[in-house]
Length: 455
Image (tube, rainbow, N blue to C red):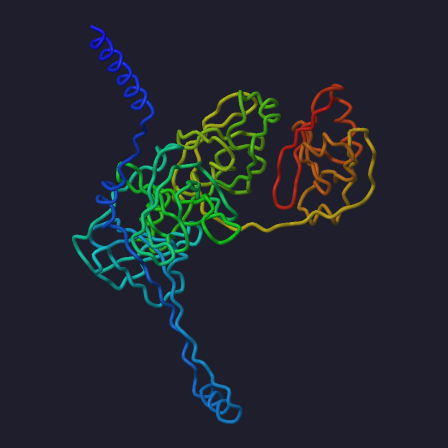
């Protein structure tokens, strides 16, 4: 009887250990199956730039230098670069990064089965860093195109490429963030991951667990030049839009709304009656632009573009840029606390010119933490404005925290144009003692709203 009792107790202990062990067991994705499904469509790219030939006079001079001074002259070498890419159609179209092949005289593509092809450059786009290649082949393996917009932060992803010339290397990680932007690339909302990529991974695919490509691995942020846990990929929807235009026309055209915008700060959201900071706050409307024709006004907040939410200022340019000029688009805006729908026919991109504001002239202390000064006629002409006052001598911390800067030109307060220092003082006197000061200022070539809280 005691023997059976011990058996029962021993069995219970084993069951508890087994249950506890199972609870702690973690199941990771099966990347082997994923590689089997996708690896054959990833290619290694070699781009060769041929060194220029020396003319007859140069060769003669080199021979003389070597003959009389014993200085051997080394011939210029061809430059070779490498990267990755992937096949998007079975008739040979391949996507990669522009910086992988830019300036190359000869482009060679090698598949996983070691077959090689000379590639033709169909087109390249500097703004997105996308290039489209074509090889003369049929029935090639392809990658399935996914939807980068539905990808989620935290989901598993995999990269295949040729880091440091090691072909067909596989690395994995998770999506760390979405919608990242860098420098001039305002039309690319990068996908950030912790997938290890290095030099040579550029142009390769970022693949989700459904074996779909959702991005093109493009750059890393590093203090050393090597991988440090921050990798960035171009969303596949951006890349495919560019590729389609390169394929059909050889160039890329982007829509232009014609507005200057800024982020909606928490204070500005409260002033505008928004539940939370969101949308793109309009600080300027270009003359004869699509926005002006549509009736968009300064201080409008664009909250939707073609029924897609504009979560931030940075979200709007890629949305507009992904649409071709001449397309009619729908905009949901918040104006004076009310929702309004407007329609605009997009124009094309144009350059902008920066103008610097000069300083000086009559100023007045107003006990608000900064001084203002009248603008001279020459300064107004240089800035291309008819009115406004110049900001100088910011002395209080709350003003600096509001992001007002010395050198800014205040053009309006509470939606009323500021004519001069005297007028600015009058407008200030109309405010309640604890009412925030809402300024519309010109800074360089742009304009923005500033909210200064008063205690």
